[in-house]
Image 1 (cartoon, rainbow, N blue to C red):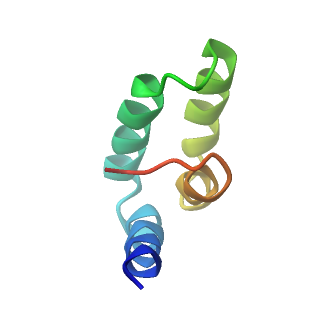
Image 2: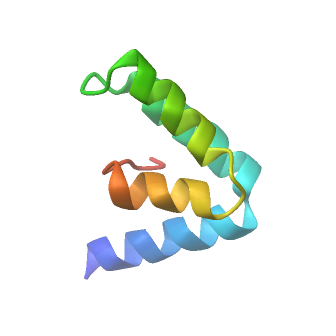
Length: 66
């Protein structure tokens, strides 16, 4: 239940507060040790897409905003 609520909050934040969410995603991406440099750059570019980019990062790359 808590995981679904966190996902819902992250999706709503991605839609309405994209600039803040983008910064949070970039901080998370840069700090990840399990990604190569190329995949980090790719995910930073993908998360720049308004609304859908951060949602894709959370769902496909097992990322987080916090």
